[in-house]
Figure 1 (spheres, rainbow over the protein chains, first blue to last red):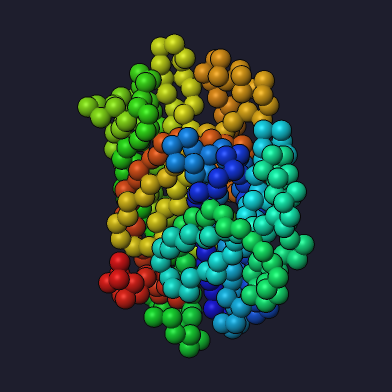
Figure 2: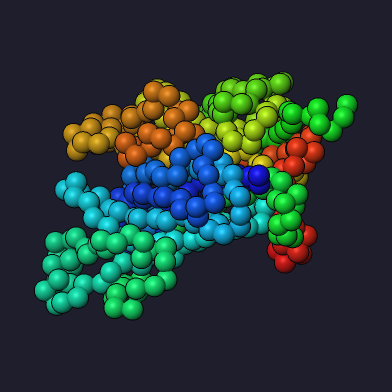
Length: 179
Length: 197
């Protein structure tokens, strides 16, 4: 069976304008043909304070995941929930993002743009502006799927930068053409 | 040896930790770095030093940059790519007033692709989780330190940390592998990607 190795780091978050410390929860989602051999498919980064010079948060969170697969359907995806932690130790969601992993071996720098459900009423937006907090989605599969998004109103947020290296094993042996 | 008998591959890393950049300049008298290499369960070091300490260095004409040029030459053997070695650099400062203090940590993944690579990683520094602790570290100039910096390469307990970032470390590394492709692994980017870049 063909194997996929994902090595790298969740490097940083950029252009999030909250100004609070940020952390990120991530999950790796793959189709039913994919089996996890080692590594973990979910985790949480450290809570980083934004840089004073360019407002980016460094996480440098290591990723090392080993998958084995019986088919090419459901190539793994990374799903991110970015949260902030303010000076009063309150925490809320400030961004959702999703990226499919590259299918080509080698180094990749991926910038994942994030979005957040927008405030729907004036009182909500006033409350969020002065007191903090945000709307969060109840069905997390909306982040990685394209359906059911029509009535969702969202707001653009910053992006997450990940640096990963993909190593494939025995794909050509099973007739998968990636080059 | 027949193809089917090969079960182990060798990876060699040659390079150096070149310099550190602190964007606001280095005010301490001297900086030094310690490095540790962390690897997974199936890996074994074959030759080379897996941890070490550099000289005490100061900046030159450029006040933001401290050059170390600390060489690293390590060969690893493994049967599995999982647990690819990572390099953890601890940056420390020695000054007359403060004594020996921590400047931060930088984490690198040693390059999994053959060839020469220049890697840059930001320095992160743990913060106290309480306001009193932050005042104390501001007052004394000493920051919280990790009991075991190797935890940064694991990623399981990172969520307990609060960090701050400042400056970066630059590493130049060449990677050479043996029997990696014979075992069916493909780590080389296709030629069209190199041409596009």
